[in-house]
Image: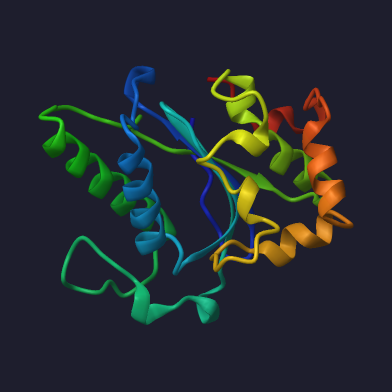
Length: 203
């Protein structure tokens, strides 16, 4: 099935997993390293609204920036020549390739780390965003990595209402939740995700 293109000015749920469901994170420093690479390759071209990293997969809710908003001087490439056009898909490819090469070298492994093509679903209805953020932050609970979204370290949950510096698009999330208490209470609710089933994936 042909993958949809990531278009400027649109929101997407991005996700991928290890090849054949294998682990892609083996220790805490792997998560940190992946986030640094994500910031290097993706932050210049996309705003990040929510994210979670799990042992064998990850989820990101992103907004693809318009050309005029892209920080050209911060773009990183795998080649020394700057391309004539900005390709968000290639930026994700650089992210995955860079991380996979580092992991293979560190753990003396060979072969593909990620599945060949990362999945992406466009989100075009504002009513779905609250559920999508709930879905992403509660993924660790669903997969029994944590007993609550608030207790899991490798997600954006704790950063949404934090005062610490962050590149998260916090203002977007703040508009969806009236206040911090509503944000926390909503994440404790049990949702069936029927309305966003087409925008999610089961691993």
